[in-house]
Length: 321
Image 1 (cartoon, one colour):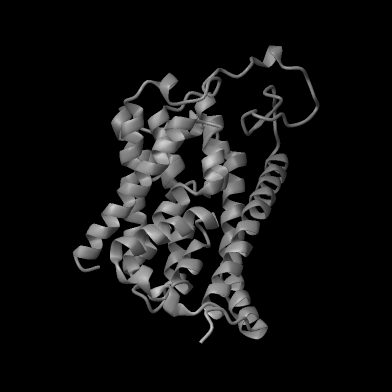
Image 2: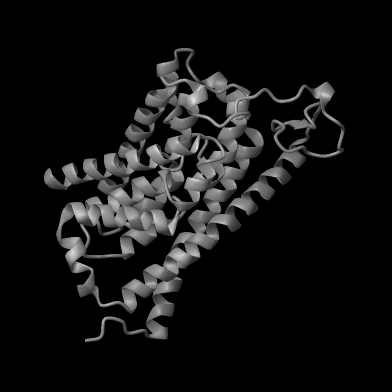
């Protein structure tokens, strides 16, 4: 039997199945992210955080349940929050946790894994994502800011008096202001949220379509026996799936559909690693994180998450998951 045998009909059915299942969750996630971008200011976020820094980091890990944000938009929002004075630990915890600890992600994961212990997979994904995000946030909160962030990330924004009037929404101004001086109407905020949602949707839809195409091709054209050696050893299977998450760069609102339908011979712990590591670090996030963090921090963050999540999932495999 040839290792590759392409059939257009089988590919089309598989591709459209993954696409039609995932697109509604992608659209819903983009719309909610747009609303968060337009209506949630750093000042409002600070009001819900405890004064104690450690407690604030823990609460930041749960903010995705209230202010869900996909990983693509979180970097831009967090950059704005950092410039408004949000502590680094809280910002990093929210940035890593919100794309996973989210009601949209919970629904999509449960729907994608129907018939494959959906409740267990959903709870493990959200629980492990929360723990990892809080741990990294607490760790970075104890390091000097200048050793973590790019220069200028936490610099204060220009005062309203020093800003030239431009007659429209300025880049970097807080939601709810016009060039930082005049109040913005609800209608303007809604238009801004729609624009942000459309931008996020188009950005991440490209990666989802590519991921759906690769998944459908692997599922219908590639001889599954070629993947059996990778799936046979749990640790290799886990690191293989995490490497695939880096390359595919999917959105957390749709990656569960790829994980559930791809590589059926791989253990559930490998799929769990894919679903936790992917929203925290992939090829596009490597470049986006460079807007916030020094490059060495980005590299160490990626390696630490890769090894940490991989070993935790390997241990879960040994415990019988």
